[in-house]
Image (cartoon, rainbow, N blue to C red; front, top):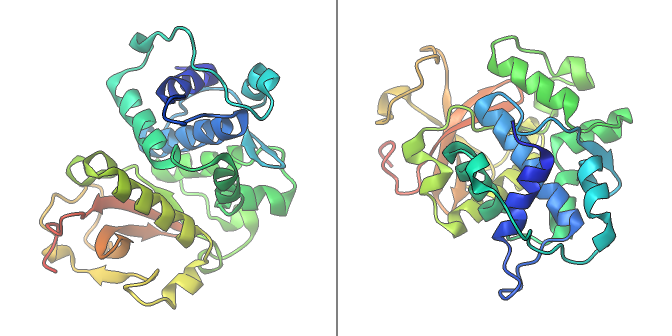
Length: 268
């Protein structure tokens, strides 16, 4: 398993001072946070073992923050040496995608985004030190079929919760790796906007806005994950213009399976 420092070094190595692409400690904390979350969603295990806490300006890995504290609010320099051999291809692909999607945003934009997301809201409502441990533990159990009702966490029915998003079952032919930089940015922006609503509010939105439409199982041309039973209903949100992201809902969680960027998944 990598450490939080390994994840941080990978992101810092992507920054280009000549291009004005700089990473402060505040921004680095958010990139590492998103990397941890996506790794848990995709592989059902953490990327690194260090704890993430809820601080005033969003998620922070305390050990990592203290390590780079000397740079204040300024840019952290690119590491003089990084051993890329410690990152397997899956990890490099994930970190590249996280940086492509979230690295384009300023530190304060990322901070504001995390404040609107479920882990941060959970921490704010319950005065928790950690904004991710309970949520990620619940998400892992959901992936293993040992579902914990969200009522156990915040005592709310799913319709009154903001949606959670999982890429656990994303089809590789319809994944983020197939998307352009603009499409990845639009995907991140769509998740951000949806996360500011409850499922009840989303249900009331128009289907070509932030709402969704039902997609018949028989119309889907790509392989359907084998664990999904016949009674699972597929729905589609628009993530980039009219391009849909298709998946299914389980409680407050929306599992994104296909990003249909070229409209080939089902008849439109």
